[in-house]
Image (cartoon, rainbow, N blue to C red; front, side, top):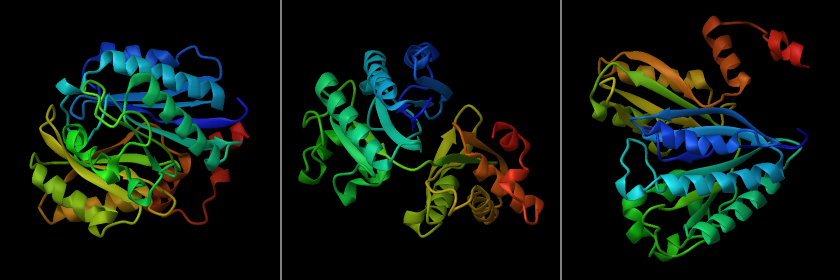
Length: 298
């Protein structure tokens, strides 16, 4: 591959694995596109895909994926622990190699326009592709979720950027954007009290006065009878993974609740984990050039 863009589409199905595979199969065997990872969560009822590709090939494949999503998912019957506004919920484009953020914004606009016209779906541009400052934050765009959008879409401030001005009952709405890489990082707590997870999430996230580059929410994991603080670290270089982990752990102590594990969703930059290793092992004067795999791949 020459010029590379990453895309991390999230779609609202994490329980019916046949439907998940039907969508993910769109990425397999496509020249110029490489499926790197995908993970489904039944409690969230959501699947996160990580794919990279050359711009033209990736753009065409994302449209094909959207078609498969809208064939298989009915939002009027959907429920899950993760906020969502549509069958194809979020489509972010991330510049990786030889591509500018401006090109990713242009791609977000083309993809958004096509989804709106071809599938009759209201489309909202977010992050770097946002057409207004109040639309930059995905949480603000998605507030109200699928059920609330039937009224929200009628407000002047929330007219779609592309597509119809009414919610597609089966497909919902979609957010398409361009952004920097982020780390999806969840911390599991040794309790089933969702109120504790919600309170910790509010304390840790930036909007609640917490860490500058952290978005967070509480989620109940029904199958394990525990709760988690689910986070997005939107700039892992400025808010490190270990810092978010330690803050959750510190806040959990207040309620006498232990941290029993954590998880990374999708792919994570090596540097994000190396910085955590440096912190916990108290390694002095460490360089990325000391990582064996990095030297081999050079």
